[in-house]
Image (cartoon, rainbow, N blue to C red; front, side):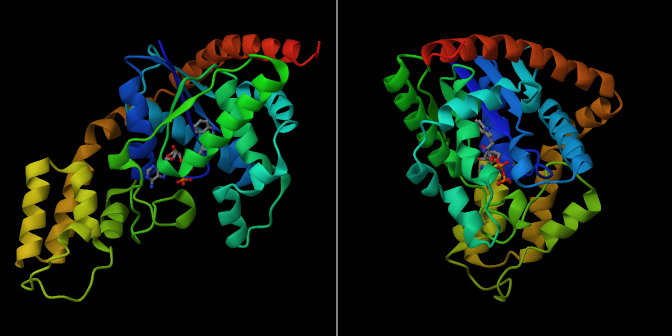
Amino acid sequence: MPRILTGITPSGTLHIGNYFGAMRPAIELQAGGDAFYFIADYHSMTVITDPQERRDYTRGIALDWLACGLDPQKAVFWRQSDIPEVCELTWMLGSLTPMGLLERAHSYKDKLAKGIAPNFGLFSYPVLMAADILLFDTHVVPVGKDQKQHLEMTRDIAIKFNHTYGETFVIPEERISESVAVIPGLDGQKMSKSYGNTIEIFGDEKALRKKIMGIVMDSRTPTEPKPDADKNLAIQLLKFFAPKDLAADFENRLRAGGLGYGDLKKALFEHYWNHFAPYRAKRAELVANSDYVDQVLRDGAARARAVAEKTLARARKNCGLR
Ligand code: ADP
Ligand code: TRP
């Protein structure tokens, strides 16, 4: 059975890009595979320096995953920092990772371009991610398109390690579903916690309604035909939430003229809000039962650790460490 693994960084509140790009595919895969999902709190250290904020986001993401359908009976679910072995493996892999490979990382270059002062953590981020994946003998990694290059780097690093020290790691593959590869944010760019353009999965109804009603449209009047209706952001987002024929109907009405942007955004909000209603109820239950959430993460860490220890022992032996 293929082992499936993915992680999400607790650097903010999860949004519908995270949901459609990573969480939903992972949750769909948990039934048929050997699923390993974790909260990448070590990774969050490159973005967040407030301990309480890190704790809050980590807890929030645990609740979000469980509310959205992660089943701890089917999937191993843990906090990355509960398995510090991953840091040791990062060192072993880093010692074989060319500087040039890391310098070419889009995520690193993007951060530099935004004026963020680089540090070693930011630079070596893809090596820690490779360690996450290789430590668990992962076959398949469901992620959004933005992580494609990190997966290629993981493969390069694993191949180099196997070549240098003998067969040690499984060579993983990414799984990127094209239809949800890049969910656009409120400004039309990729939705991201770091761009301030998100629609959260969970949150205050009034504030979220305001965000959606505030999506900026052009100044064409409602009656004007809009031949570019398929490019409209609200139409694109509606397609994730409304049944296919209904979304097509909205698109046709917008194209023909006669549908106002306000009405379109109202429909988007309703479909979005109803889509997550059952998960909101489940999340509220979980919030009231925090011992259960702690227990799930503790059990997950124990199960993950059993696998990690074996892989790390193999890697240590192959490279001549005791
Ligand atoms: P963010 O960019 O918001 O910080 P992360 O980097 O923590 O998100 O991403 C967690 C997972 O969600 C990754 O698998 C990533 O590819 C996916 N993801 C994030 N944003 C999007 C998006 N806009 N569309 C599709 N997938 C996304
Ligand atoms: N870098 C990923 C992100 O920002 C999160 C992540 C960390 C991850 N380790 C991983 C994803 C391992 C998949 C596999 O989205």
